[in-house]
Image 1: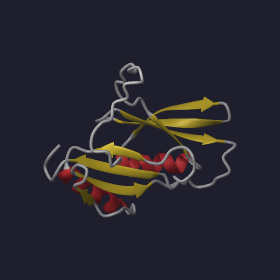
Image 2: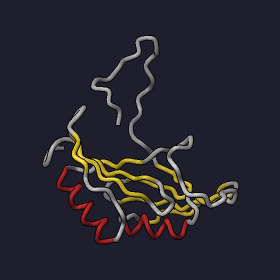
Image 3: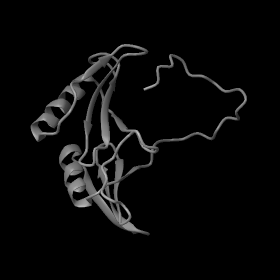
Image 4: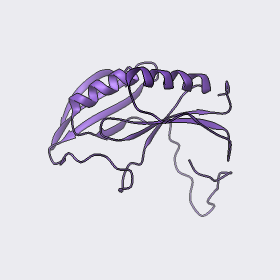
Length: 153
């Protein structure tokens, strides 16, 4: 999260066409079968399709309630090294939840599954939100975030 308290406009840059939503997230993993099982157990995702691509293959999942799509790609050129956010590329993925109570439910769910996670951090500056952090089998950092105070959306 940026510590910028207001949106900064760039008068020297022409406005871009509008984005509607994120279409999907595609993550490179070392073992698609293990990641497929983990994402299905943790997020309740359903397998949508298998696709091949040059140098490997992917399984595409969907979370039916939100229509969030995650691709899990395995590349033959991958040397099996775990993810590290300090290298160029993805830092982490954050998913919004409805409110702080839902975040509490996620914390309990992750604990039941034995998924290591941070305590929920309640942040007030630059605006109120709460965040729960955990990692997938390839060490990719995932966050669940609730905006506002307890009970607020």
